[in-house]
Length: 112
Image (cartoon, rainbow, N blue to C red; front, side, top):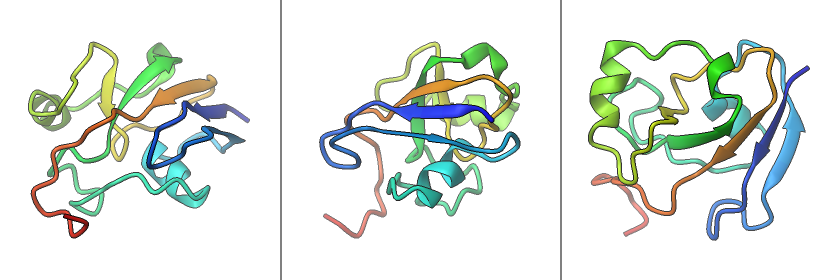
């Protein structure tokens, strides 16, 4: 089974995290199942950018992004060439290292 390593994030997972998952799960669902409260304001419908992540290792082993995801990513804070929306990114056979950006654009956040 592939392993996902989340790099430390000051608020969401200060210590970082590492766990194995079954291929075919989205990065967002895997994070939520393991107690990492990644934002997903659109309920994983590919309608926002709050679940934006940067794939630091294993990017080439992921599913190809659809045009809708690519269009939304243009609006994400801290966009990098290896950026993906975690709700649309399906884990393959390779291990992943994932970084959650420091900021997110969430106009609907209830935590403000």
